[in-house]
Length: 233
Ligand SMILES: *Cc1c(COP(=O)(O)O)cnc(C)c1O
Image 1: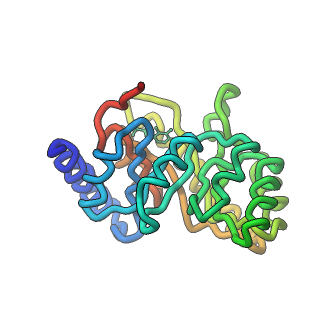
Image 2: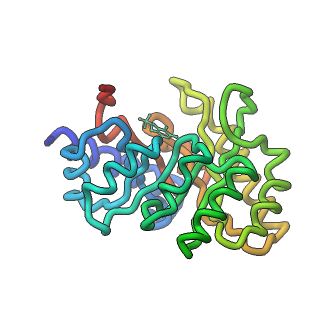
Image 3: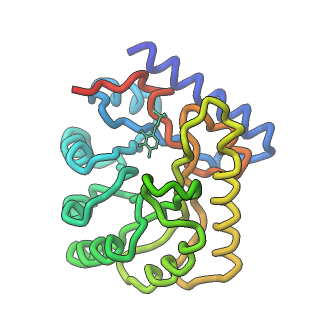
């Protein structure tokens, strides 16, 4: 478990250096450990390190783990979300932010289930910046129309945007996708849509977090860089 602690320190160091270089305030950049396929034991090391938020990509795993920790821990849903699973996230404030909303149908289901629980769900709009047909997310050119429609839902609050860049060994190659997300956020802000904030940009993972910071990321989703290789059972 000591390896996790030292990996966490290393990631935090990389973030600090990159933020300094980019002239950004470290307090506006959140490191979100992605704990999918990782044990509770490993997650407890992170909690002891002073971080109490985790990202999961599957509803079942998120809710199982939710039950194992106390209410201080906050959970982010980062993976593709099926409408029939939304109810499990809305209940008991299990989820603090859903990063992966890319359709009105899904947003409406989140709205319905959140209303039943008398809560507002914070969401990000997932943008398919690479315009890869095999990936989830709305295309940039369709995003503003979608955001306008979702903004009318009372129990859903748009807090920003999320993207998953295509995998590359060279972080420079993903810079255009991050830049595109930031540009879209600025465009949305300029239009000024009621009930919509563009405070959060969820982008950057283990491989490319420096580039993401330079391009304006506020949430870094880091899995293997903290926990090591995922343990698929
Ligand atoms: C798994 C996952 C991550 C973390 O990826 P690493 O390369 O392990 O840092 C980030 N974002 C999403 C959407 C993921 O599914």
